[in-house]
Image 1: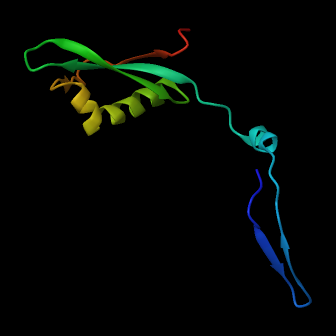
Image 2 (image 1 turned 90 degrees about the vertical axis):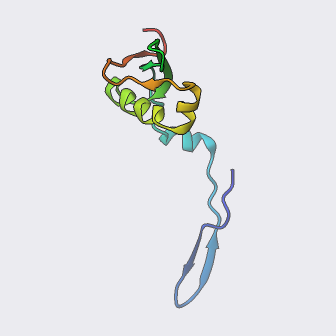
Image 3 (image 1 turned 120 degrees about the vertical axis):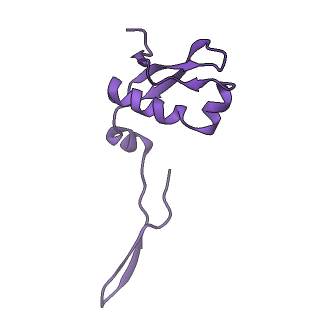
Length: 102
């Protein structure tokens, strides 16, 4: 991948434009490792009293962070629509486990 001219250096005597070339292998060498993916089950209760869970696959650095991110995601309108009227039941504990099954 070649970037557009990235920098123009100016001085009293001359102006020059340099083109920077970035190889994808260079970028990969500095990329942070991917975050582990966690499966988070957040309890729900339907209006007729039936209990269930809503599942989320969440990339996060820890189980604690995964629960927090899944809870934020569960509060979105899209997640509420998928629950079909069931409410989050935050009085019951959420469960979390690594997505790899470990």
